[in-house]
Length: 330
Image (cartoon, rainbow, N blue to C red; front, top):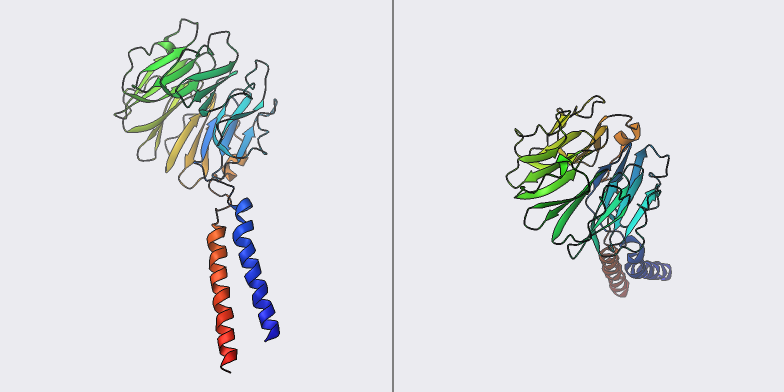
C-alpha cells in the first residue's frame, strides 16, 4: 500500500507540473495558413507551424530560411526572400545589393511583396513602405493610402485600394501601368511586364505586354486567385483546377491536369500549386525534386497541455480516492 501511495503521489505531481510547465513550450506555436511563393529561380513554402522551407537557386542565400519562426506570410524576389512575422516585423534572406533587405525598422506590417530587387510592405493603417532598387520608381509608394493589398515585380509595384481601384508606381511609360479604369478588383498581381487583376465576379483583367499571350484571359471565369509570372499568367478556379496563358517554353503553363489546388504562384519560368492536403505540384524550369516531398500541413500538432494535464490530475485524484476507500473497507 505504501508503494502504491508513493506511485500515485508521483503521478499526481507529474500531472500537476505538466499542466503548468508544458504550455510554455508546446503552446508557443500558432497555426498559420500555408502558402507558396515563387522567385526568379527559387520557391518558398510556409508551413502551418510558421516555419519556412525553400528550394532552388541559392547563389545569394535566398533559401537560407531554415531558422525562421513565427512567420505568417512569405514573398520571393529574384534573389531574396521575405517573411512577415506574427508581431508585424519582417525578416529577409538573400541578396541586398540594392538595400532590398533593409527592413529591420519596419513595424505594423500586415502583408509583404517582393519584386526583382525591391521589398514592399503594407502597414496596418493602409499605407505602404518599400526599399530596394528604385531606378524605375518602383519604390515610390510613400503617398499611397487606403491600400489593402500590394504586389511587386521587376519594374513596378501595384496596390489595391479599399474601393476596388488600383494604383501603380513606376517612372516608365508602359502599358502594364494602364490600370486607371479598373474597378471592382479584389486581388492584384504584378508580372514581368504586365499586371493582372481579379474582379469580384470571378473574371480577370490585364494590362501590359502581351507578346506571349499572357494577357489573353478574357474567357476566364470562376477565378478565385491570380498570379503573374515573368511572361505568363495563372488563374485558380473555384473548383480547384488551374488555367494558364502566356509563354510556356519551359512548361510553366502545363497545369491543365492539376486538381484540388488552393493557391497558385507564378515565377519567372515556373508555376507552383498548393494542394488541399498540403502537398505541392509544379511545372516549368529547373524545379527541384525536393518540392515533391513538401507537405506544408505536416507540422507538429498543437496540443492543449493544460487540458491534458488537468485531465490527468482528475484521473490520478480519482485513483487515489478509490484505493484509499478500498483499503479502508478491506
